[in-house]
Image (cartoon, rainbow, N blue to C red; front, top):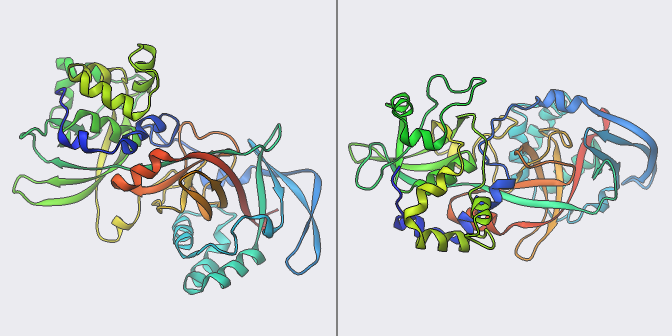
Length: 399
């Protein structure tokens, strides 16, 4: 790779590439999703004592057990404890929920026919159905007080690329080479750049070429991206590069390396950007600090596909603003979740679906919020780091 800073790199918002640092604890860290199925996740929900008495919408009361879910405790609550429940416009969440019905576990599969029928209903009908069929549970850690959690956000980067190298587009993104994925780690990022054996193994494996190697790193951190690629005949088309695997090397934070080297006092994007501008000859050195390289597979983006994000760990496409990544040891994939988060820039009270995970999304009160794609989404993702409260909505018949 050439150590090159282009106008495309300089023109990115600092908030966009600030996600490079957030992604160190977020979803797109290029980690293979070898995760339990929704069926296995749902099966581990169990009851613990003592039960809790909650009020019902018809004025009656009911005594319900607290549920123990792996790494979390679910405490039953009344619907009126969900902030903003009566105000949420549910149609976007319903679309995300229907996506989960493409790969439902046994707990939610019986509800999917009703969900489909209600897709043409209005928000009041959908709300009434939820109250009749689901019970909200406040998600808390197994031990200690429920002091609130952390919400971050992630997005799908969008770049331009060329099918063949040239005119400054010299940074390759590779498909998965033969022999990668075994027990033994493959060549590191540095070895891929320097060793003839690695270069021979990569010959003919390039999917396309970016103009900036740091953009390639960002794409690998996020795990997927939308690419507007120029073909050899000059035609352009929009494709998605989706995660296909990695080289088995450990992930290392380039921001943390800069801190440890004393190059920066904080790893915010303005600091990283200033360092890159003043040290263009060290870009390659920076990249080599992260030995992990992610490989991709190319997927077409038709008009319908373009309205959704990449597939999450549940195996269904993500919906901007309505999909979250969770710890599946706390909230099973496919679970509808009420999310409440108040930040200085963004306040959220809405229905979302647990459809993804990430290497550092751990614990009961942790979520990553999928905000979409492109620079505007990157700006939102770069700012979001704020308190979080979650309520799992579980079928009443599943207790």
